[in-house]
Length: 296
Image 1 (spheres, one colour):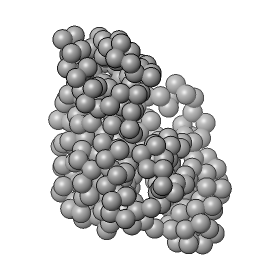
Image 2 (spheres, rainbow, N blue to C red; image 1 turned 90 degrees about the horizontal axis):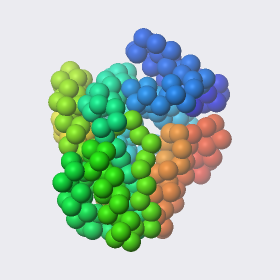
Image 3 (cartoon, rainbow, N blue to C red; image 1 turned 45 degrees about the vertical axis):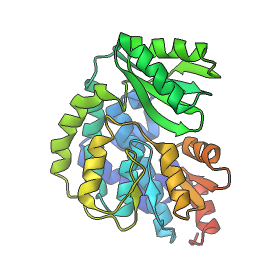
């Protein structure tokens, strides 16, 4: 993850070096050489993804590529705020390390779960979650795209919701391999612990709007950005609404920055008329720089 970026672009290598220094351990080694089991720990995964994303962002910026606005899915909202200047990278990587640790420890291993439900509308899934909640907490956690919703909560309640969704005609309803039930009420202890951490971090007014996960409203105020990052720990990620809001505000091209292309696929499902590109390696950096007017 990010190894080629660091090898090719000095500005990307500097991002990894900063992360190593701030965190006090060789995150770069884990990104470049770590095993899946090492990277699977959310307190490692979150700073690793953030660092790789910002390494790609810095390479794009060095080639004259900038944004009109930004949004991020869950953890990605921190990357969006670094891009907008709301957060300094060193503060963001330190904060997401703590965020990952708090979220991992909020629910004992095995007690929480998440599941993807495909082919049912949100209102129907909300009804199923209410019915399944007799076995514990379960609620929509990621509102990703039309007909694609992830639910989270107590494992037994999630299992029940999956059974109900299959009976209701869902195209697919399957458990996800995750380390904790993110973006639901069970994450309240993590949100409480994250609040004081972010209270000690300087938040600036973003230089361009950042669309918040919690309500898909563009943020232009640093204090609101801080509150939204705390609120999103227990709130569903409204990714579909974020994409639709950006399009309504005139955005017709979206660039996914960081490992993977999942968000690009979701954008196409939400709005097939939006052009999408992804950047996770040097080739992607050069391609985007050529395509949208930067310099290679």
